[in-house]
Length: 79
Image 1 (cartoon, rainbow, N blue to C red):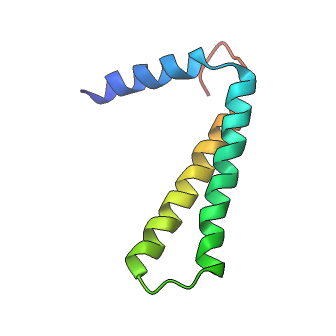
Image 2 (cartoon, one colour):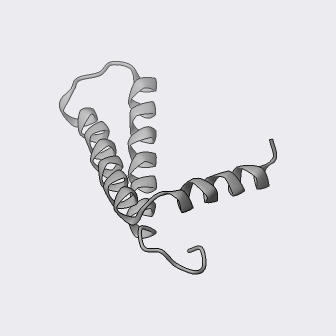
């Protein structure tokens, strides 16, 4: 599978979602990412690798959630 195929597939999925689904899903992703980052503060972990994975996953979820909320309005052109 080429990168252009992935881009087309993502666009198809994005176009199939309603504005409300994008907004709610993005909001949940932001909250989930914040919860993962919060785990780093309040739960003692000895594994540095686990801390790094949780941090990267938390930030990635928040970024995707922010993009989903930001693109929840239908537009004629992609952002």
